[in-house]
Length: 276
Image 1 (tube, helix red, strand yellow):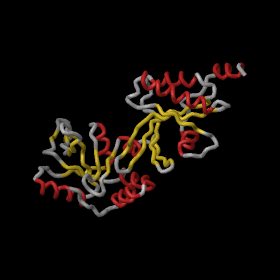
Image 2: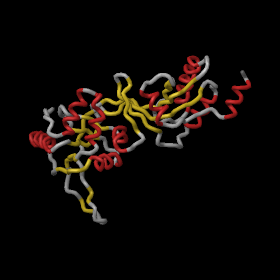
Image 3: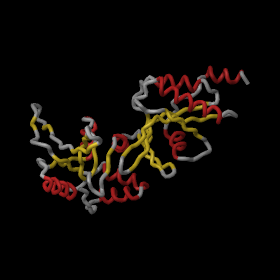
Image 4: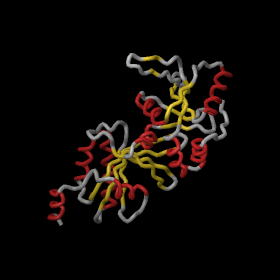
């Protein structure tokens, strides 16, 4: 049963605006990370020996197949929205044990640490999945939100610095003298209602010379083969051609805000020079 919520605070007004127009996304996240949020309690909170209290947080679930269900934590953005949810639960005969009011950063860190999926105001017109990429964007300075055409993108540095693919990608790029710089990032498409989607490693490249098109096509093919050979956590490496004279959002971000993952070594540049 979907309920209709009328925005009752600045966060819900921003959420409604962003759901209707993705260019309002930044305002939504600015309000969300500063908000007080509401969770449902699943039982009596348990005192611990160190004086802290273990919270018992209610999860809901939705069926994903005849034999599987997907669990998530419902998060509410106002007292009005949590009251509506309670009314629906009471009408359906569902049991709950009160509510927990908590600051957004604390809620997101707690749920993310416990690997719990989460959604704002589920079963309502103001519902929204909150993904780990969005939480990282709100909490950490290394993630940025870009608009590329009609698409929202989240880009950030690769947090795991010891992945086995790093050496393989550098070796791959070293085969191409036309590659002058490479930028390696985690990226995903952002849908306001569904959260981060289609996570990939973006390999943004600056190529020079008269073989740009041919070399870029070969690099894309090499990356597809690399994905089959090296453990990439299921993510593909997706090359992106940067042009220093092209002012798109990804190019501006790479050239202005992050350092290259790859530059040709002095030896490779010397070999290129003597081969001319």
